[in-house]
Image (tube, rainbow, N blue to C red; front, side, top):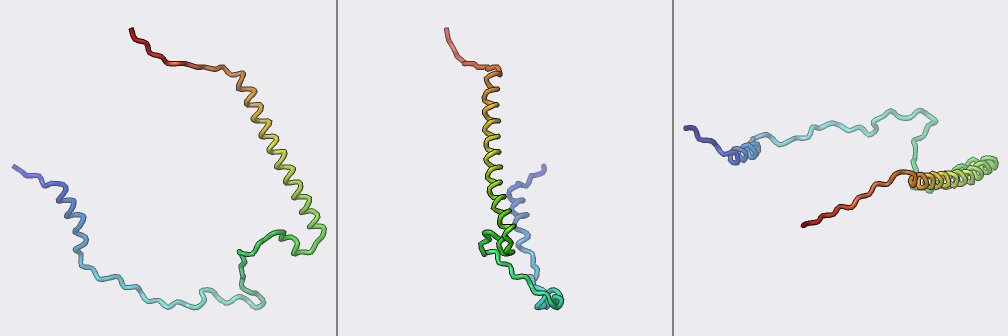
Length: 116
C-alpha cells in the first residue's frame, strides 16, 4: 500500500525551503552620476522657476490692458447667467418628470398570510 504524504507538511517544506538558499547579498552597482543630465541651455535662455504656491487671482491684469480687463468682467457676469439658466433648465426638466410620472400605471401589492 502507498501512504499519502499530508499536504500541510509538504506545503510547509515548499514555503520555507527558499529561505535556505545561499545567495550572495545584493551589491549595488557603482555608476557615476553626472551633475546635469542635459546639455546646458542655449545662450539667452533661462531655466524655469515654477511658483505653484503663488495665488493666481486675476492673472490677466499682468498685461495691463483695460480692454482685456473689461472683457473678463463681462465673462464673469455671463458665466453666472449661464449657470443660473442651466439650473433653471434642470429644475424644469425635473418638474416635467414629476408631472409625467402621474401618467404611468401604478402597480402595488400587499402580501398576507392566513391560516385556517
